[in-house]
Image (cartoon, rainbow, N blue to C red; front, side):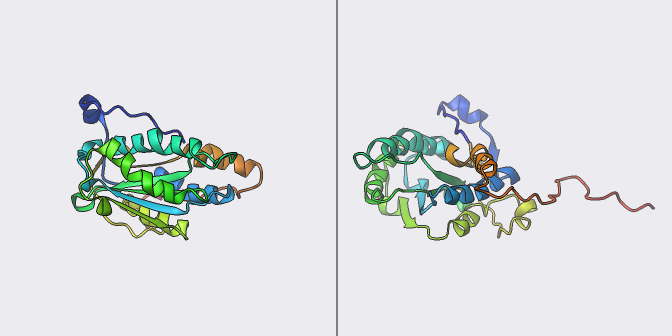
Length: 225
């Protein structure tokens, strides 16, 4: 799934959508993406949490600046700074934003290739300062930990799902506040096109379709009076 390039101008900020929940389809795509990553042997093995409240970045710009960090710094680093002679995989990740209690966080579940973790940890604070301005408390702004159970991690990440769909997906929903701009997304390498290709090759089972209720639509006609 392609991630759109973002312009930080104030006119664009005013036009950006404000959301209070992760909608059904984005949530489903994030859940599927974890399975796609495992089939590709690129398990989402690290959880990165960035607390933008410890930076100078205005809340309405966080989504765009986090995208800039991924596109302008993480992606090029992954492609160009690996061990000599080793071809690295494309960027492979999912992410969500939360704003519970006015604490704006990015959760980034990402595949980090073997031997690249320590360099990533060293560079991330520098990238963050480049896109978000001064980082007031680096030890509190960035938290990086291994993610041995990506399926559990993604369910935690989408706890801000629309309450209407939470039970269907087995999510313990909680209010994660208002976010301006993109609230969640995934790398192109894990998108629906890749899932369909893997299914066509027989490497993934076809998606099991469940009868989802539609908001505002009755499941069956009301009984006759």
